Image 1 (cartoon, rainbow over the protein chains, first blue to last red):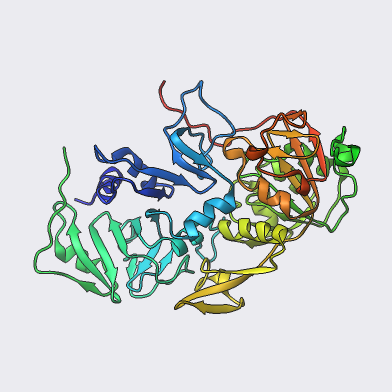
Image 2: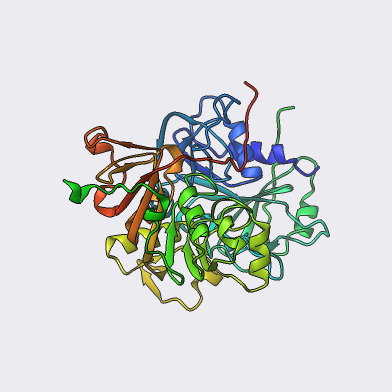
Length: 220
Length: 233
């Protein structure tokens, strides 16, 4: 079975370490915040200028001056810091964020990512994504392994305009967890009940498959 | 001391001198911390052919979206413009020239412009359409593109409190691009919720020192929320 969105978030959350500063993109990455393992403390960075994003507010706590990068109303947790946009991207570009999780349309075996623009469709903009992928050394890309029509999104070379070049080192899809290095995808884990053959079939880029590919496990 | 008194008492005075064809830097992220009354005054004045430097372009009928109604913006540098049907139409019709700019680069262009730095190298956008045609240089084995600073004729800024000398503090994430926009305008206009006496704001807590600020006006704000998201109390 392919992973659900929640399972994808759970799996990514296992990569969190105590004391990590983490930037979570919109969509599945946002859900990662719900699965921070017990005993681990992370600070969420929101690129509009908040380090230490807290929970959504209650109706009484809603404050128009307090939003996240997705423009949702949020709170700041104890120990948070708030700053301007140049400061926010200084910490992003400067490599101070320990882990960035974001979605993508395509990634390729060289670590290129395309996530912001489909030619011929309306282009809304890249927001902070180009800065995030340029600045982080530790990025996990979350995406479906293939399109609805079965076309692989893990490619030899991205076909869409890039968000960043040579910057992605890990990918979690609904089928597999993979690392990107030395010009290839390396299969590390597979979703429960998903065969290596299916992953091979749906990966267009160069894929290195070890003898044993462990199956992910999830609490019921 | 009147030489340092930056207060003005009407929005007409606040935006005096703005003309068609000018470049305007605006603070705000989405609808958070936008200079909503200064934008409304620009709409009222009807100046056209503006170049706007702003992370977003408001929504239909509010914020910078107001300036689309009479086609006052001919060019915008922004990182994300997806919340606005009128904007989409003007973009597709070629009535507005959109230069999509990565968010961090946009902030740094404002900062650099205000800080006397004409251009800077950044890895952001290298190898992407954003890097095309820009000078590339390698430092320590990595590629960077040259991005030029912004200079604006007017900067419009929303603060929380200011004293009459133009020292400004921002509240929570309404800070965002405001302090950066404040530095890169030839004329910087700040609207705030409250003007206080000099000395009431702690000197070491000032976000925008008054040296950057030309005019201060106290206003009232709607502060519209774009995505109200709540948890069960």
